[in-house]
Length: 67
View (tube, helix red, strand yellow):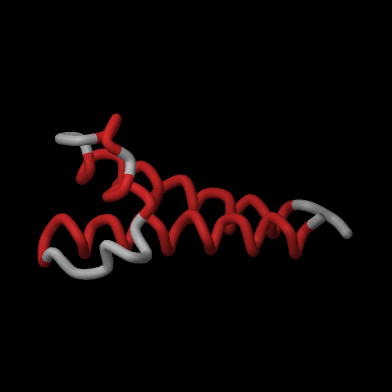
């Protein structure tokens, strides 16, 4: 369970970073899920920041899980 949480947190973190890079530079559209979802149009930076914080929190919380 711990390894799963670490992996999931890392993937969420990477999606947030890719979304921020896309918003700021226009690159990484292929990797950024946030850039592909039309429903999030206009909220890309906010959603990406939430993904970075959530991914970091899940990775930190994975340390408290035993197993």
